[in-house]
Amino acid sequence: MNDLQPFQRQKLYDNRTIWIRFADGLGSHALNWTYGVGSATMLVWETLLLIFRRPLQFNLLVRQLLLIGVNSVPVVLFTGVFTGVVLATQGYHELKDLSAEGSIGGFVTTSVIKELGPMVTAFVLAGRIGASITAELGTMKVTEQIDALEIMATNPVKYLVVPRFLACAIMLPILTIFATVFGIAGGYFTAVSIFDMNGRFFMKQARNYLFIGSIIISLIKASAFGMAIASIGCYKGFTIPSAGGAEGVGKATTGSAVTSLMTILAMDALLNQLLYTVVGLK
Amino acid sequence: MIQIRNIWKSFENKEVLTGLDLDISRGETLVIIGRSGCGKSVLLKLITGLMKPDQGEIWVNGEEITQLKRKALHHIRQKVGMLFQSSALFDSMTVEENVGFMLSQHTKLRKREIEEIVAEKLHLVDLDGTQRLRPAELSGGMRKRVGLARAIAFNPEVILYDEPTTGLDPITGLEINRLIRDLHTKLQVTSVVVTHDMDSAFSVATRMAMIHQGDVIAHGFPDEIRQIDNAVLQQFISGGNIQKIDA
Ligand SMILES: Nc1ncnc2c1ncn2[C@@H]1O[C@H](COP(=O)(O)OP(=O)(O)OP(=O)(O)O)[C@@H](O)[C@H]1O
Ligand SMILES: [Mg+2]
Image (cartoon, rainbow over all chains, first blue to last red; front, side, top):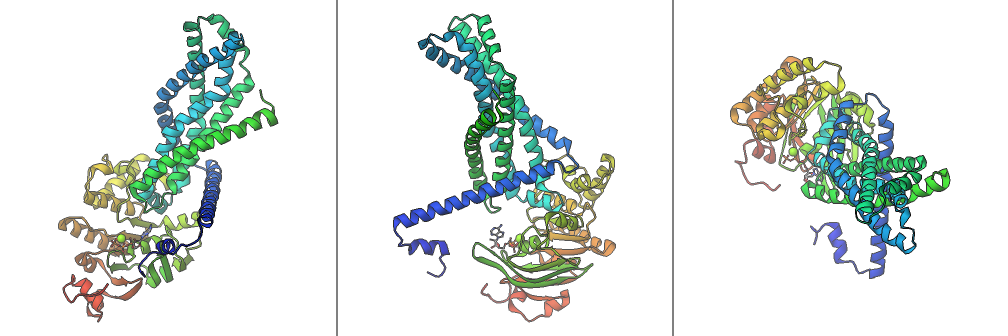
């Protein structure tokens, strides 16, 4: 019995009631979660400070911008178009019941700009870029490359996180614009060619709903989502235990995508409150 | 140069180092031997501050490093080179970028000048012309030597080698031994070499120490080490040819 690990021993002799064990498990999950959120926030804070510490390595930033931008454009455009198509189809039938199918142009435009454009883009990038950041940094962690950076007196946060953070914060709004334009185009195409609507009327409607405030909201949200995706991706990669191996990298990669998605949803709710209610954008 | 005082380190209830003391003086080449898993690599990581001990002090150049912040640590590390057991090359970079990494990060040297230094260091480890290759295209022994070239590229005052000759053919192994000796005699570098290769150990060591069950059980000059009356030590350096010993 003596060579059992303590945690095994505890399981063998665990005669506590199921409720106490449940509470214990819940408690330690909550603690872990709080600890995770805390140290992820520290990472973001350190990143923000290091952005302004010279030298900013431009070549690293450009590389990430290209990697994130170029790789994501096709998927983002594809998702954008079909979001518009689905939205127009759904909207047409709903609005028809209210005999308001004429305002489909406005409906599609507002929804895509304020909500679906940034959201869909962020979802795509959480799956693609967030996960690949975690896989890359995680592999570097378990193969001691992060240690090697440290030994060579280079701050891994400055060298690895800052360029990815900035690239995501810059690229997300740009990709969101692409998704939005293609989303509205998808809606237009659907309305005109499937529901036989007047194209000029659709565009007039769309223009009426095109507020500068909405565009600002869209871009602010997109940029914030980008920062979240990069931070979570990097954090998940850095925190793989160095003895975690390939399995650890795999787990963290899935975890990264899932955590990003949930964070984006929560942030969206929060930012909507903030931007509409407090700042008063429209 | 380096003083290690009463260091304790454990992982998930597994005691690895238990109150270890060790002194490393300036300009010496200390070879550390010990069985696989006894904590040699961990000790090197503690010395460089990559890991924190549970207890104890580590002094490098008169500074206690276990409590230092990253910035102060990085200041010290500019003078320290380390060859990792796994080489730990950056796999997204070429050999040239790997070896020239510190030069491009911490100096304002021009690209041409860095290329020259890199070529010179690669020549030292007998890897001329491999500049454009990527780590994945190299054999294990070649990777080790690139790691070595990278460790010495910034002309460190202290070099830590984690198994520099493991996985090398005997001839290359001899060359690496000579390189370690040269750095010692010509540049008075302070070196710590972890190795299982007894020929290499006796060829480069000015002093040796053996770690067993979490502590240094014997240390001394190479001739002394051969004389010390300790069964574990003697079995180790004679390649396990004496009697069976309980680890
Ligand atoms: N990051 C880590 N997480 C958990 N355990 C670790 C970690 N690093 C080392 N260990 C444990 O510490 C012990 C010592 O490891 P270390 O790598 O120092 O051995 P070593 O003496 O270098 O062995 P070898 O000669 O095989 O390289 C091992 O039992 C190992 O399991
Ligand atoms: Mg080792």
